[in-house]
Image (cartoon, rainbow, N blue to C red; front, side, top):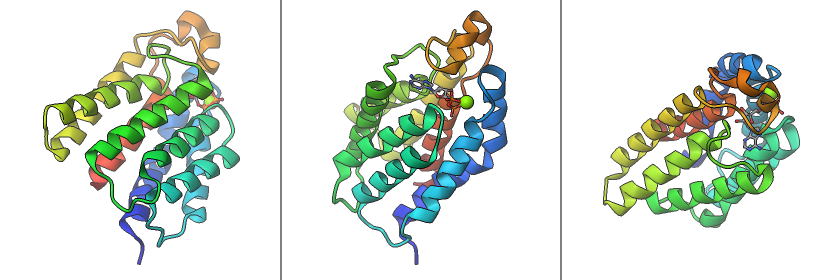
Length: 204
Ligand code: ADP
Ligand code: MG
């Protein structure tokens, strides 16, 4: 019997793996056509490495992060690896997650990505999905919105962030080499971040 925790990480992994070609196609337009391949390989390794009866959320997320760090190349491996490692912090030793925990996890994940990648919002990266998602979740919590609605709004906001990446020029990562020619294309990393949030929402 696998735990709900394992099933949730499996749901994220499956969502990424199902969208491998889509993510790679997006990266073909403004990068080197490996984002889907990178992420799918990473999550295949994650699912193999993770114990199906793990219940400690912090320990599991640390393992996810370590696996992504060690198995995924490119910019996204270290960035997502750090994000999961940092998200583990607020839930170390816990077996359940509250909406407030989720907010802290997202905050820490963003801080980790920024620590490593030195990007800010508006540079056409995964942060353009994740930062608005965090802000939405934070305002839902402050306004006492129920969890289900909060998670849907968070995903809708992240999806708008992904749309926004089409309108801006990349100034970080490989896509920045294209300069203005990166405008008009959707960022692959913002897209994989949105897929992750949607998989979590659908699972919960
Ligand atoms: P690579 O660009 O090395 O081939 P991937 O294709 O796997 O790596 O990942 C590309 C994605 O990584 C981009 O779409 C972008 O969202 C994200 N990214 C790149 N550089 C940064 C950065 N400095 N900060 C945040 N995200 C970044
Ligand atoms: Mg790439």
